[in-house]
Structures are given as C-alpha cells and as structure tokens.
Image 1 (cartoon, chains in turn brown, green, yellow, red):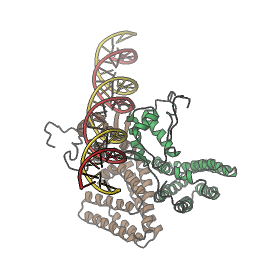
Image 2 (cartoon, rainbow over the protein chains, first blue to last red; image 1 turned 90 degrees about the vertical axis):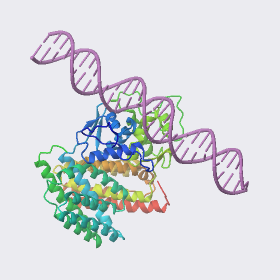
Image 3 (cartoon, rainbow over the protein chains, first blue to last red; image 1 turned 30 degrees about the vertical axis):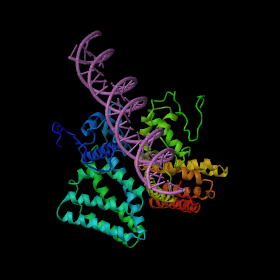
Image 4 (spheres, rainbow over the protein chains, first blue to last red; image 1 turned 135 degrees about the vertical axis):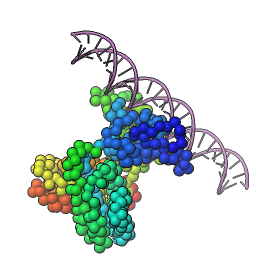
Amino acid sequence: MEDGARRFCPGMIGPLPAPTERSPTPSLVESAYAALKHAIRTNVFAPGYQGSEQEIAAQLGMSRTPVHEAIIRLQEEGLVRVLPRRGVVVCALSPEDMREIYEVVIALESASAGLIAAREDREAAAATLEAANAEMASALAREDLVAWAEADERFHQRLVEGSGNRRLARIFETVMDQSHRARLLTLRLRPKPVLSVEEHKGIVAAIRTGEVAAAEGLARAHRARARDQLLPLLRQLGMRHL
Amino acid sequence: MEDGARRFCPGMIGPLPAPTERSPTPSLVESAYAALKHAIRTNVFAPGYQGSEQEIAAQLGMSRTPVHEAIIRLQEEGLVRVLPRRGVVVCALSPEDMREIYEVVIALESASAGLIAAREDREAAAATLEAANAEMASALAREDLVAWAEADERFHQRLVEGSGNRRLARIFETVMDQSHRARLLTLRLRPKPVLSVEEHKGIVAAIRTGEVAAAEGLARAHRARARDQLLPLLRQLGMRHL
DNA sequence: GCGCACCAGCTTCCATGCAAGTTGCCATCG
DNA sequence: CGATGGCAACTTGCATGGAAGCTGGTGCGC
C-alpha cells in the first residue's frame, strides 16, 4: 500500500495481503492462489478478463512460477482457463452452467441434510444452523442485503460441514466458489428473499426430529425454488454469460 | 518398451506412453499427469509410496517442472499429498474415507438417475446403460471378474454422463479415481456380485418409464447395498488404510 | 550407555533463461 | 483500395540453478 510508484490500474489485485506478517510461512503459491481467487470472487477480475502470468506476477510482486502454479489450481477448480501461449482467462458462467451448479448443489445439500438428521449429535449442528438463520432474519429486518447474503452463505456452509463428510464439503465449496459472482450480482435483482428464513427453519426442524427424508426433501425444495427464481431472471436479462 | 538400456525398478512408471507418436502435441505436463494417475490407479505407486519429483522426472525422462505441475493437479484431486521439502506421497484410503466416498457417490448417482428419468431422450441413455449391463452379465457368466468390474464401471460412468451435467460427471470421475484402487483390491474378496445386474435392470426400467423418484431410490439403494457389503469387509480385515 | 547438538544430504520452492507458438500489425503487392 | 505475406512482440512450456528447510545420522558431552 505504501509502495509509492505503484499505480492502480483496472483489474489491479493489489500487493500481497501482508508481505511482512509473521504468518507460518505461507508459500508464494498459496498467496497467489488466495489473491487470485479473491480477485475473481469479488469481480476485480471479471469473467472474460484475460491477462498474462507475467502481468499478474508483477502485480503480486513475485516471479511467474508461483503464479503459474496457482493458476493450475484455479483451472482445476474451474475458475480460469489457460489458453496455451495466449494467456489466462477468467471463466464466465452461462445460464446452462448455473443449471448444472444448482443440480450439483441440490444433490449435495439434500444428502447432507439427511446425513445430519441421521446423526446422534444432530442437535449441535441444528443449533449452529439456527444461529446463522437468526442472523439472516436480523439482516433482512435491517434491509441489509449484503449481511443477509453472508449469513445465508454461512447457513449453507454449515449445512454441508455438519454432514461430517469432508469430501462433500470440499466439493460443495468448490462449486459455490464458481457461482459466488452470479449470486453477488443478482442479489439486488431478485425479489427480497423473505421465504428463505422460513424454509431454513423447516430444514432445521426436520434435522432436530431426525426425519431424514423430510430434511432431504426440504433442503432440495429450498434450492429448487431459489433456482426457479434465478434462472428465468438470468435468461430474461439475456445474460449470455456471467 | 523396447528402449533397451532402461532397467525396471520397483515403482517404475515406464517411459512416456508414446514419446515419438504424432499426437496433437500433448504437453509434458499432460503426459506426466496421465502416467502418474495411471500408476496410482493400477497400484504401481501403492498408497504410502513416497518419492521425489526428481526421481519421478528421471523415470519419465523429463525435467522436474512438468512433474511438479502434474503433481499439483493430482494433489488438487486428492490422489497425492506434497509434504514440503519432504517429497510427495500417494494418499491412502481409510474405511472412513470410503464411507465419505460412498456418501458422495450415492448423492451424485441418485441425482443423476433422477435427471435422466426426467429427460425427453431418456431412452437413448437407457439403451447404453442396458448394453453395459449386458456386458456385466456376460462377464459374470464367464466368471471373468475383471471384465465384470470394467463393465460395471462403464455402467456407472454412463449413468452420470447421461445426466447431461458435465460438472456432476467430472466430480463423480474424480471421486471414483480416488476409490478405484480399493474396488480393485477388494474385487476378489467380495462375494460374487450377482445382485448388481438385477439392480441395474431396475434402475434402467425406472428411467425408461420416467419414474424419477423410483430411479433415484433404486440408484441409491444399489450403492448403499454395495457399501454395506464393502465397509464391514474393510474393517474386518483391519485395513487401517488403502 | 544415553541424550543432545550439529552437519551432510536430500527435498521442494522460486527465479530466471531459452525455445516454441500465436497474434496482430504493417508493408507490400495485385 | 483490398488482400496477403511476413515480421515483431508477447505468450506459455520447460529446463536449470540457487536458496531455504526438513531428516536422519554422527559424534560429542555427560
């Protein structure tokens, strides 16, 4: 931040989060990965953005190698694509992509809800879900859409983490990373999400009573409704991608 | 294979598939990735195997860089782990891991079966599924367990590909790669898989008639039974991992 | 005999250089 | 004026060398 000569250009990632901090030696690859992912998630690198590793490396103050390796990871996660000898581009999402993502999310979340409902210690998970849901209600009452979205993300994150299945949670996280931008951008285009809190309550209730099938069904219905609300909106807006 | 001077050593991957072939320039990274993945899947690199990039690079006849990048991809897929400054080790699977994998597979496959059953062109998918199932029956009649396993893999692969959801199929493939070894090694320990063909027929029938819920339920039940057959076996054998 | 500090060897991490391939511009020709 | 050939700039692919760090063994002290 204090590196005087550095000019801000469109698409600037900024220097490394904390170059001089005493963290447990995060490797440069790790830093580049985190910075790039953050830049993509927050739309600093918009979909379709095309840049060279050289240029990104310069912005991050490191050489091409760690940037190259970070990009390989991001490509594996479906966030960017490397065009050989042409540069790296940030992947855009078509409505078709969003449909795919919703189908995967529905499968994972409903399975997770069922798994939690079948656990002995389901009450603990239910409590943390309820807390996140309360934050959503509070944010909605304050008309704070950003806080609502963050709490909603927390609710769903805890829903999959509560399953006790790390693989499932990791896959979910990857898919959600892909669609983060889309949710962010449509946040203010959608009708106010008043139904979510109630539907979440239903899921939590089914988990509490150990009704596996009900928990699965409600989790699925919740996402299906959200999908049916979002997809027509995207198509209607003629969003070819993003 | 004919490259005379090359000696076979334990854990030898073999030289690149076809060093002089006129393929459309598969990059060295791609070659290394494919070779390593194959070596892991076929147990040439057994779980727990620990080696250095240098050594692998020498076996593949390339420098460290492409090997390093291939390993990053494999790590992202959960097949290996890089211990900084210590080398790379092939991940082992605990019974716990297998439980996780089955849960994810059940979620993805049942969703996929439902999606196919809801498609207009479900008959085409049903036909290819039926063909794979016939190969399974034939192999079983010949007592050819390896052929049976290959056909079974094809059936399930087509089941997820038929969903028309590329992300779902890719995730499924990654998870199946992780568990390929385990299936391979327990193939001869399990009772003969006589039920599979019949259960597959049930799934295909439900798809044909467009019974979404039935297709989902049967796909789930099929994998759940396989899991309940395999997991106790693994624990019973005291398999701490693999 | 036992424990601890040190050191040698090995490993990945990262920077850099060269090579190969693609793009787009520009001069040249029809 | 339009089309085409070639060249220059820029890109990633890959090799290699130095730096930093972990491990395991060795020798010293107790």
